[in-house]
Amino acid sequence: MPVLLFALGCAFAALTAISHIPPQRPGTFALVGWFFGWLTSELPLHHLILQLVVVGWAVAAGGLAEPIGWLGLGLAGLSMVGLVVHVRNALRTTELIDDALAVGLGPDHAARAARDPSLPPPRRTTVLDLALIMPFKPRGIERVRNCVYHREGRRRLCLDVYRAADPAHRRPGAPVFLYVHGGAWVIGNKAQQGRLTVHRLAEAGWICVSINYRLSPRATFPDHLIDVKRAIRWIRENVAEYGGDPRFVIIGGGSAGAHLASLAALTPNADEYQREFPEVDTSLQGCVAFYGVYDFSDRDRAFRHRAFRNLLLERIVMKRRFADAPEEFDKASPRWRIGGHAPPFMIMHGSHDSLAPLLGARRFRDELQKVTAAPVVWAELPGAQHAFEIFPSIRSAAVVTGVEQFCAAIHSDWRRAAGPATTADSASCQR
Image (tube, rainbow, N blue to C red; front, side):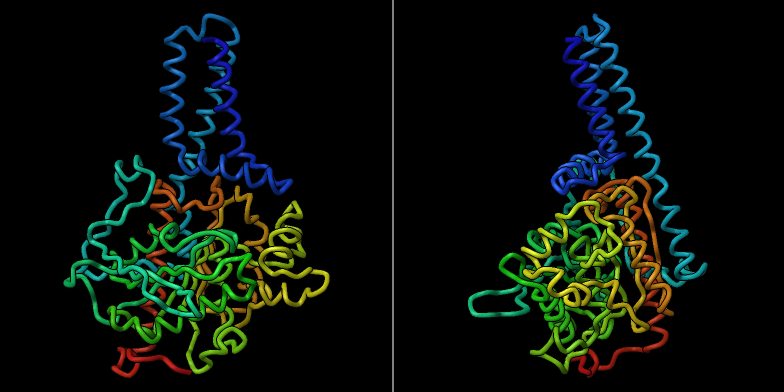
């Protein structure tokens, strides 16, 4: 038993160490390190309880009968200290995001983001939510599945619509939120990601749309972005049937989805991405970007390994070499599409992100703030890994609350400027 306790202490300490100092190279180590670090840093309470139970059992079974057992207990203790640090960082999230909103939107942002008093109060994250780990759809939310937004031969591209289940809680002309899932442009599904965000906004009276899009290697960029533009067209033409205002759409996404959402927000009405429907207005009223990738050319060497550009992008997503077509990589990069036309942005990134390095997000924020007069909200979350808002957790609860406040404030500002929708506006939005 002392040897087992030592082995457990080594394993627990290694997991916690990886979560605090994630490997950045080579690419394989970065990916594996992210997975274990993510499960540890984003679920620290689960790990803390598990380690207390397992170590307590090993000690009770005679694990301290030999010196090696005491060493194992010490390692487990260090691991638990590291987990407590993660919990402390997560508890700081609310304060950090409130400060970020105040800086980006102004000190009166809370008043502008006040909820409609006719809506039920936001549902709090419960102990059961945290224990179950996976985000389940609240009873008060209706999900309309698999609406087809584009057909190409036998292939159908579908989206889901989320809204309040009770018609009494639906407001006519509701703002719209479009979510684009991540997955390195090669995997992922509309039902797997962004659920906490769309559930929270739907409870607040928004019409939320979550989409699938073509994935690589079958798809070649910009196919992914073209599909996002097609989804915007569907919203302009159809969302009024679900109670949404087609004039107001905020887009959001995580990881590859943040890249596509940011690029869509920064390329409004770009004919090269909407040749089938050049008359449709694809401009957006805001963007929420979780842990995104913003520079395909990676000239600042934010990535400490070559797998991202040389393997993933050149061979699978872009299917061309950077050396042969650097301008194409720039066009595919939100950082190099920034202009004064940029809508309001909320950018959130973890300090320990090993899949989409923090440096790239900081550079994007800096360039955006230089040229746009629109609000830019920046929240750097200490200790957070990639995909930090997937699980119900202390951190993700604060994050989605901040997203709701950002979206509500932007919508309030827009509504004061735009005025009420007309029938013609609700029917279609054309350039």
